[in-house]
Amino acid sequence: MSSPQIVNPLRKAAEDTLTAYGLSVNASFVDKLILMDLEVLVLAIKLAPVWKNILVPGKNPKVVLDFVQFLAAAGKRFALVLDQLADINKVLWEPVDQGHNGRFKDPVRTLNLALTDQQLVGFIGALAKLEATKLVHLKKFLTIRGKEPIVTLLETYYLKVSALVQDHGNLAFEAIALTIDQNGYTDYINETTICGLALMSRFKLKADFKGVPAWGPGDHGDPVSNLDGHFNKHVMGINNLPLLKAWEMGEWWRTLGLKLSWDEYAGNCLALKPAAKVLFTEANSLPVLNFVKFAELDPITGDIKFQQLLQAKMKKAYLDFTLAQSANITEIRIHGNEKRVFLSGCILATNLFIIARFEGADFGISSAYFVPADKIKEKLDDRLAFWVLK
Image 1: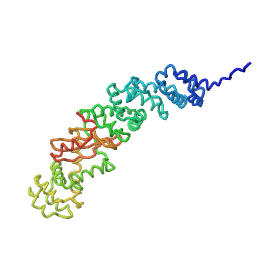
Image 2 (image 1 turned 90 degrees about the horizontal axis):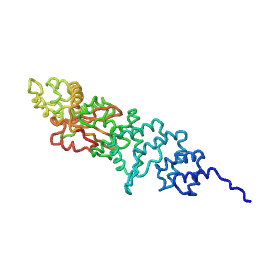
Image 3 (image 1 turned 135 degrees about the vertical axis):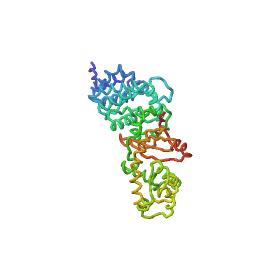
Image 4 (image 1 turned 120 degrees about the vertical axis):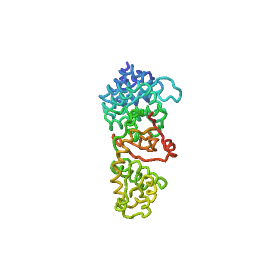
């Protein structure tokens, strides 16, 4: 009489797991599954009636192994994690034959368990709340990105924005959808630019933009230094391009209403320009018509005392003027590079350009300057736009 065969509960559970998901018993995968705890395999079998339809395991037994390992990693969080996994599949998975290159023909099988419950629920909730059209745009972006892991990519963007603007990680998806909707430039959408792009997504139409509230740090490190740097360059011509220097100085002096007498100039400079004397023809003052001629004499470079006089006369006016005019710019576009996202526009009647950006969550002017009329179109076209405010 033969002795009864002893059944290994763990091996039987591994075999039953494969069977429950519609797979034939494969010794190689059984050997991998028995490395799991028995409780995890029992849970996987219990979940099979629902999840075998989501996981579509018939193509590759590894899907079941991945799923079981995911359950093991989730531990006591498995119920919440599975709810989120199901929800993200409802959003992203398209179980339709889309051909060999179909981007979403396979379901999402795992999630990043390093996310807290709050982050996970928030991330997937933000995707689920996207309007249908915006979701289509988001999927198109993911298709453009090709082989990048789609969930990891979206998680990264969501968390970056959430860390900056609490509970508004959804703005990352809004910005991407808006870029796609307007056939914008997508190559510069990355984890460095996504926060600026997300905050800019609040400006979809010209009516959404009311102007820039302050000067920002720009490339000078802080708002005060940035304002000083641009005032010195554009209003006083220090380190400006030689061909633009005198012309733009004259534009700003006229715009800001510079009043300068000969006595003020002569008494506040270290190196008097003798040729300037004949230009002060209007009651011993410099008339508007002679602004450019005076600037062409280069009376400012290296003359700290005269620089201080002009700063006292015009820097506050430059600040006030640029902030006020920022609300009036047109031809507004959101554009950028690999590191920054900008909002820029101009006032065509005066050829004034203003550029702004977010530094963290603070919106400020980066630069403000005049552009010659024959260079306006070139300046407008010199930007790879994410979208244009219409």
